[in-house]
Image 1 (tube, rainbow, N blue to C red):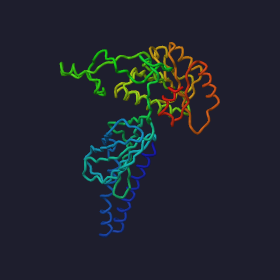
Image 2 (image 1 turned 90 degrees about the horizontal axis):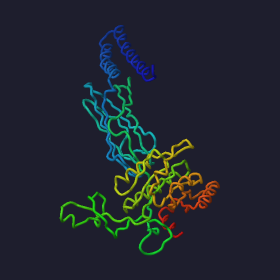
Image 3 (image 1 turned 30 degrees about the horizontal axis):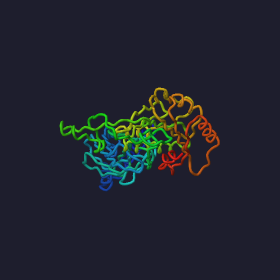
Length: 401
């Protein structure tokens, strides 16, 4: 027998004891005053006993969120609608939305409230939720509690709400300033072989318009002829394609690495850059291009749910397949060890590899990371170390190197 059930039985015995005491007092004492006391207590005692057997589990709770996807620092309105499916009137109903994993917290409105129900069939609880940390916020079952007039009997249940039981919080993004880093253009001679800005001087075909396409890319002659919006397709110059690879292995700087990757993805989506994204976690699929809001959302969803890979037993992707036709490879890591880099270099088919090593600004670089950086340079990888404060000018610094 559980403690909750035992507590409920003890409370019921207390109510019966009070009722029995009042009855005994009336029988032995006699007189109008004694019976008045008994009849005064009787309805309250009966109500308390009915509360004990009230089918609280049959209540229906529906949770809706104004937005199911949040960024850190953004808020959404959460609405709980509690409906009772039994006719019996309730005096008090306590509804409490419990905070669980710490990804989010309520900032406005009450996530816990005591309702005076009476004959109402449903009540609504509404509050504002703030995204605090990236991840998938799982809502806990809603705590509900009913009681009689004097609190003799309190019945509690944790009920799973219908509707949205999770909230995805995207990682924080920062401004990253892209510049053309020496793509193979018709003029000029730059050292670096890739660019994140699409060349729009040569249109090769047209396709159907998609939300997010630039107005300047619309093929107006086709629109005048067919009354359907068409978008120009441009030639991809050599070296434009970039593959962004995030090292998801456990690291002290993993959260900063995720922020940096999210910032690059957001900027790449806005610029319609020819960019492929993948992580070292084989459970995440390769996103071949980040050109639309849907593709960006898919990539950010992967980052929001990403957990550090622990130990050699974690499953790695097949880099030979994942990096096929990768173009230049931009790696974000906290510790680019030689074994890890060799697997990428062997699959890169002589494509250049650029590695951003993210470190904390207030701590010296660990010796083992410094040794791995030295080994990475010896393997022909261009390594650039940076802190979170240097994200914005990271590509400019690489271009100057």
